[in-house]
Image (cartoon, rainbow, N blue to C red; front, side):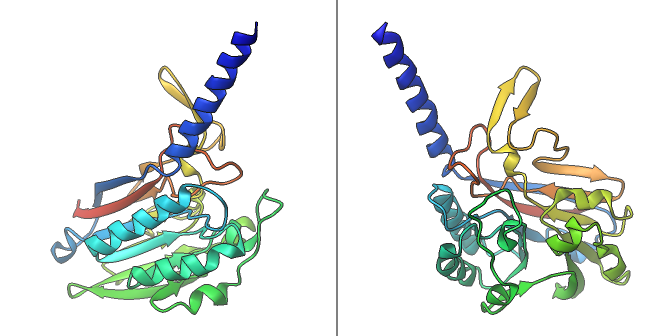
Length: 272
């Protein structure tokens, strides 16, 4: 029966090797997204969306992050938005600072891992001031900022993961109706169900890693990392609001991905 044991060991080794490989197998995706009320001047606006770097842990997710940043830097989109979980350990901070500087300007919100608010017992907290001090990084913690693009105004509102967890986040209270496009950045996709429809044309989120460990079945997928999650990856419509959930770039708990490739996404805005 020794050969059965050998076959079993080879199968396990093959599965683990694939999961390790997939964790660094970056998908570069360009998606068109129709938004209501977008003026003609902003038609074609390009927004790079990155999320969930989880730097500081041994994983091929680091390779995915580096390749994603290089791709975005080369394409030079109009906006670069990052939706949290930048590091899992403080040892990832030097690389994070180096990568963010390469983006030549980005808008960032924090995630639960950045604040050591996770099931990971080894998670290490990063102080918001450490990120806000990086050149070109605009950190939004329950704050908004306006960006002038092509003679029009784009408003970005960020959600702090602590107020989200306390169910106290009210990003819609910060909206400026005079802005031509309003975008909400939040680590958690669930924010879209806590805001009035139309408060933002676009909501960007991450957190779910597309399930990270996914078992495919005919007609469905079992996403082991988030069994009950609703909006896991891609585009979703909530009335006049569009939600984009990034599959993210890094890994948590285990350095593997199965049927949940890391992704960097460029969203091309079209007027609806």
